Each structure stands twice: as C-alpha cells, then as structure tokens.
Length: 192
Image (cartoon, rainbow, N blue to C red; front, side, top):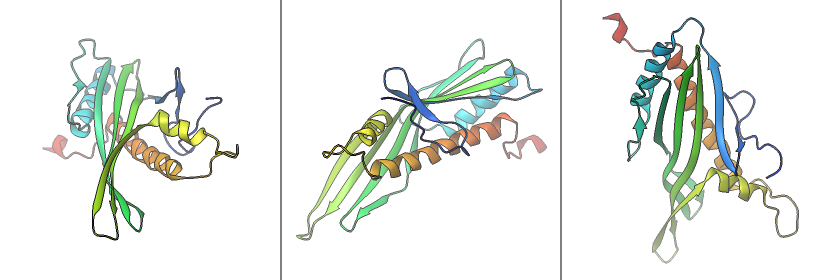
C-alpha cells in the first residue's frame, strides 16, 4: 500500500494511517499542562470504565507504574438500509484502545478495528436470508485501493461510506476521552 491512507478529515482529532505490515491505527498525542500524570491516568481509567463496553471485557487497568491503560470496546451502530430489499443490522465496530500517560501528555492508540454486521435480504417470494459478515479496517482500505477490472481506480462505494461512518464514531470516542482528560466530565459528583 503506497502512500498514506487518510481516513479522517483535518477537523478531526487524528488520522487512521498504515503502520507496519498493513496495520491501520489511530495514534495521537495531546498535552495537558498543569495536571499531574497520576491524575491524567485516573481520568483515563475512569473514562474507560464508563465508556468501553465489550463482550470480553478485556481491559487492563492495573498498571503499577500508572502509565498505560488498554481495553477493547464494541460500538453499536444503527441499522442501515442497503437497498429496497435488504438492510444491515447488528452492526458493531470493535477495536482496541490504549492510553499512555507520561510527562503531562497522553497518547491514544486505536487499532485492531473490525466491523461486523448481519445483512438481511427480503425476497419477493416471502423468504428472507440473514448473512453475517466481518471485515477489518485493513481489508476495507485494501478493497478501496483495488483497481476495477478495467484497471481504473474504484469508484466511491459502500467501503467509502463505511470509512466515513467509522471515522466519525472513533473520533467521537477520542473527543469524549479528551474532554474527560482535561477534567470536564460533566459530572455533578464533585459538587456534593
């Protein structure tokens, strides 16, 4: 895969880009002045406990040095109509989110991004068909970059739409984490 794959627009927090053997990751660093690392760590930990949800609950929150937090999450996406006879349901975006804290800064890495869905098709004869599917972000980028049979670049398609949607969902998560890291959680707990 030549060049950098830019999936986030410039107004978003970061960019998903290739890293190593075809891996797609989001990697961004933010500085928060005047806040001790232990406080940043605790804010990130609290945010992860509140926001990361997955069936396997794989969250590493017991770093003795208080420098890294690692978790997986499932973002549930709304059902989406594909055409007059089919729609996608049970849409889930799963990824690994790591937060590293050091010297008044924090680093967010998102990787291992996998999308799954069930496509339900309704036929005129009255029967329906459910087809589960799963695809990694790397495979989406690869499919987008594959030329068509005539050798021309692929036109905008379902993968472009999915990439835009995934970028927004992931950016919302990073944005929410940043809000928590600067200490603006919107929680009323500190007032009582």
